Length: 92
Image 1: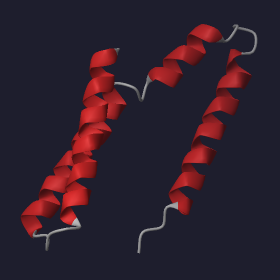
Image 2: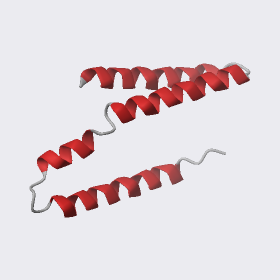
Image 3: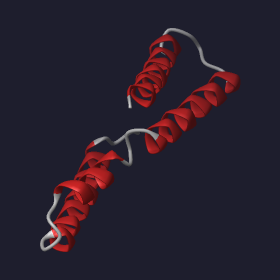
Image 4: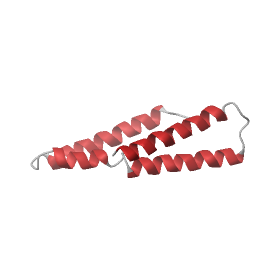
């Protein structure tokens, strides 16, 4: 479990370093492709590592009699908070 987390943190740090260093340079198309590739690695690493963890844990923790309702509430709250975060981070 720690290997995916370590890779996730490393990719997040690499992407943050790109944006930090990119603010200090003029930026080129090659730099933009590097950032896009780093973002793909970051999202892919999250999806393969820590992204599935809540879905696995809820199946193990919740009792069978409330699993369907609780899973529905968990999914709805996940999508609602994702929507709120997306709407609050406007990039123009």
